[in-house]
Length: 342
Image 1: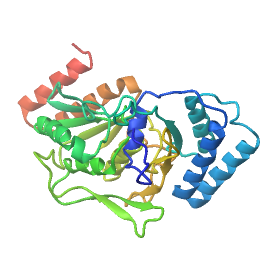
Image 2: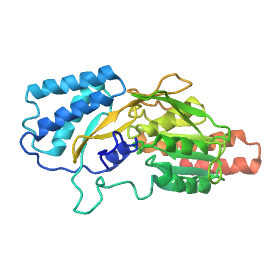
Image 3: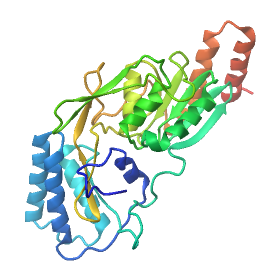
């Protein structure tokens, strides 16, 4: 994960990289913990989307510094864990966190441990029994990096009768990728997904689906199911929340993490950074978002059974909708096999 030394805030996908990476660690020198805590508090006060909450977080950290709460912390990750817990105790915003990376090797690029996923977020593309498409999608990376991978996945699934998109292990990412993937599920008429209000911005921005996409659209009519869980966070929740509000998808699983305030990592020094949620998202239909409450499923299911539940729901919906005997028989056979009746 790159820290923003030259620009104040990196793109929101940095939080995904933080979630995907295995944490680094290093010993701290005397005074490091207090210095990092003080600067983290200042950075988040300067940029947090709600100024009063940002001010309250800084005030709380400074009070803890005065009580010498950070003096005994001797490792980078222990400090990150403590500061993250302290920030969230005030903001209740799960995006608020402090992160650490070891320095790069001499002459080498700085990159978070683990880096971006080699599959560009597309973990699995599969056709399930009954011609049901399945996309296991793990990260909403920037479109210029992962757009081709998403296009290839959607092209491969374009002829399925229903689609299941799995974001149970998706920690979020770039809003533009939310709109890019969502665009395949509508027609060419753009649909507004949200309005974003950012601290310091002269006016809000809006997120819309695209009038044109590469490859083939899945279209607005075929059933789409999205699997969510506690591991679904940030942009993964936004993708689900907005499409649920538009009644384009059926959500299956358990309630998600509840992080709706996007932002980016701001540098504290060469090794520490603080994720500052500098924006808030408002859905044009619900007039609110999922911050602190998560996305609620339409069909509740345990994580281990969510895929089977969605698969069965899709098959039964298709079976009930068709009057073609051969097609109905195909779906009936798939339901019987999946339900263990044979």
